[in-house]
Length: 151
Image 1 (cartoon, helix red, strand yellow):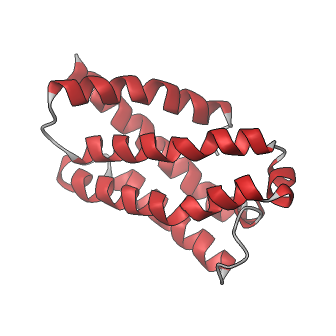
Image 2 (cartoon, rainbow, N blue to C red; image 1 turned 180 degrees about the vertical axis):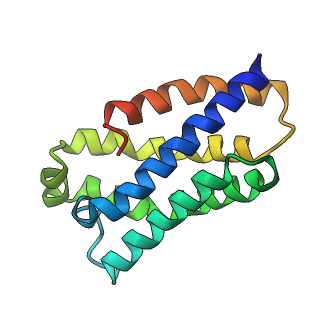
């Protein structure tokens, strides 16, 4: 049962990353509003992170490339974390996304479950307790991001 559920989570997250990646190209201003001012070349990095979200989301679908995709997603999530910190610290960014500072604060820790789930997807043979843990972790994580409108 857990193996089947893991497959469902892989396809769900693949779609999630693919959709969010495309949004980087179709709604650049959304992402520009949360870019920290100390990071140069905002548009370049928005497009670059969108490209990698699409790429890793696609590669997550295939067993042969899943490990690469999962590890790549972990690095990508670390790379984009400063934008989430900036969102928490900046009233301007919060207003641009129509969220409160508390909403931004709640968003911060969700990067960690995304990383754990990406690691889980990268590992072909996980322990049963880790499979169960990640299965339970998946539910609030995906529900939270769906509640954001897959942002």
